[in-house]
Image (cartoon, rainbow, N blue to C red):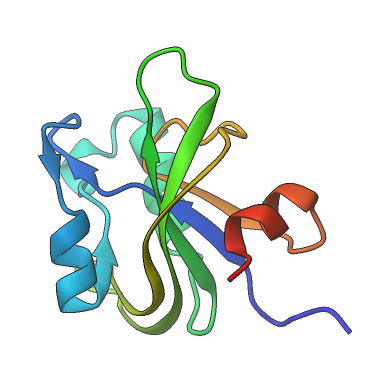
Amino acid sequence: MEPKFNYWVVGASFNNGTKDMYDEFILRGYWCIGWDEEDADNKRVKEFLDRVNQIKVNDRIAIKQRLGQGSTTILIRAIGIVKDIDPEDRTIYVNWLVKDIDREVPIHGCFGTIYGPYNYEEDWTKTVFSI
């Protein structure tokens, strides 16, 4: 039987990578996107905002970190389960199950803010989300 939830990989950097929000997200039990409607005229940002709107309670979420320009891998830093969503300000409240894991995985196209939904049957997803 297939699970009733999706898998998402998200970033924790704001202001074009100059502000790392990871500690704040973990400490306060949430994740949010650093873009808003004012930025939505940018096609890429609109895609990110649309993805955020698809996240549901019980979905799985992982915070990733890029390893620099040209890197073919990313670090998975934390894994959690979405427990609530505030659609007004796009805040995703998360029960962070595993923190500070620094698991290096292939980048799989995850260069920006949010990627998914992924299916758990993919080997890459299993690698990212295994606890």
